[in-house]
Length: 612
Image (tube, rainbow, N blue to C red; front, side, top):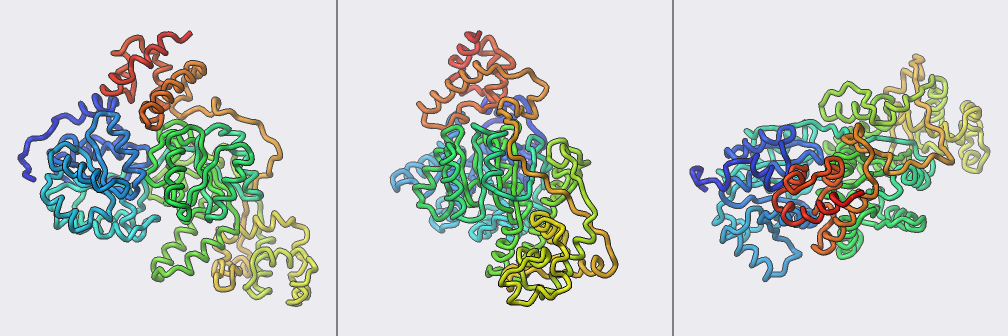
C-alpha cells in the first residue's frame, strides 16, 4: 500500500457522529485514532467498555484498504459484524462457520474492495494460502484484539498468538494495533516484543471501572449466598456466574433453574453446538444467566450484563478484572460479587504445580495468586487495591466497594495466630486446615488418635474459638503469607519464613472480622440500583421504559439480532430523559447514528410523543 493513496474519509469526528451516533471521543480515543490514521503502531490498554473497538473501526473507515481484525473467538466476530452491519458498515468475517461457497463470496468482496473490516482468527490468518491472499489486498491496518493472549505472562495465553510477530516482516508498511483491557507492565512489554512493534505508541488509559461495585465475602454456603445476592440486587438481570470446574458449572446451573431462574451452563466439555446455542440465547434474550468456566466471556459484547459473580477464586487479578469487566459495559451500575474459601486456594495451587509449565512461569503464577488472595483479604478500598496492582494510583474511599461502604472491623489475633502456627508445626506440616482445626479444638476422632496427636501440647488449646472462626484465621494466615499450601502433601499447610517472627518475637497479627451471614435481607429491586451516570437524575418513567424496550425487542426479533444492537439501555434512558419532539432532536441522543435514525427513529419517536 502506498502512503500517498487517497483516504476514504477525512474526518474521524464526522464518522463518530454520523455513523456511530456519538458526539465526542472519550479519553485517548481521538489520539489513538490519529496515530493509526497517520500510519503509526499502537498498544492500547483500555478498560472493557472504554471504546477500544472504535480505535480500529474508525481508522479502517478512513484509511484506504481493508481493516484486518484478528479476533480469538468466532462469537465475537459474529457479534461485531452483526452490530457494524446495523450501522451500515461493510464488515465480514472468515471462519469455520462459513461454507466453502460463503467463504469464496467473502474473499471475492474483499478483492473487489466491497469490505471495510474483515475479522479472522489467528489460526486462519497464519495459513500460507491466506497470507498469500492478503499479499494482494491493500490493508488499511491490522488490529490484534484481546492482545494479552500474545503474552506468556497474560492470564489467557494462546500459543497460536505468538506467530503474529511474523506480520511485521510480511506487512511492514501496515499500521498495527494491539488492544486489551488487562495487561500489567510485564505483559505490556511482552506484547510489544512478541508482536515486534517496539516503537509503538503506548496508550494506557487507566483501568478504573467506576460503575462497578466490588464485593467479596467469605464462603459459607456458596449457592445460598449467591441466591441472596441475586434476590436482593438482580432478581431479573442478565449476568455471568463463574465456577472453577465443569461439574460445578452444571450443578450450579441446574440448581438456579430449580429456583426459577433461566440459567445455562457453558464450558469447554459441552458439545460445540450446545455452547453456541447457549451463548446466542444469552446475547439475544434478556435476563439470562450464564454459569461458566473461564471458557466463556472473552470478547462478549453484550453491554447490559448487570452482574458478574464468582463462586470460586480466579487465578489472578488480571483474570478477575477481565471477567468482572464484562459487567456494565454500557456505563450503568453493575456488580462484581465473589465468595471464596480455602478449598479453591488448594485447588488452584494444585493446578499450578501439576502443570507442565516451566518453573519461571509457575513462580509468576504463584505471585499472581498471592496478589489475588491479598485483594480478597484487604481491609482497604478494593478499587485502590486493583488499580495499584496495574500500577495506577487511586486515593481510595471510592464509595463503590464493600470495604468503603462498610469499613472492616479488625481484631488482635496474635495469640490465636501463634496457636495455629504452632499446631501446624507440631502436627508435622503435612495436614490441611480442617485436620489442624480438629486438633486445636480438642476433638477426639480416630484420625487424631491414629496419629496420637491428642498428646500434643497444642491439642485443645483452641477450644474457645468456633470452627468457622478458625477457618477464617487459617484463610487469612495463608493470604498474609504466614502459611503456604504444600501440594505434594495434598494441601498440607507449611510454615513460611514470615511465620518465625510471629512465633518467636511476638509480632502482632490482626485479622478482619468476617461478616455475619444474614438469614433474611431486604430485597433491593433493579429500579433502585441506579447507574453511576444516572444517580443525579429523576427516576426513569417505568411504563415508558418498558414500552421502548418492547419496541426494541420486536425490532430485534424481526432482524434476528440482540436487542442491544438496535439501541443500548443507556440510549433508551437518554431518550426518556430528553424527550425529543422530532427526528432532529432524536438524532442528538447518544447512540443514535444516521443509519439507526433512518431505520428506527420514527417508531421510537412515536412512542415518546404518545407517552402519557
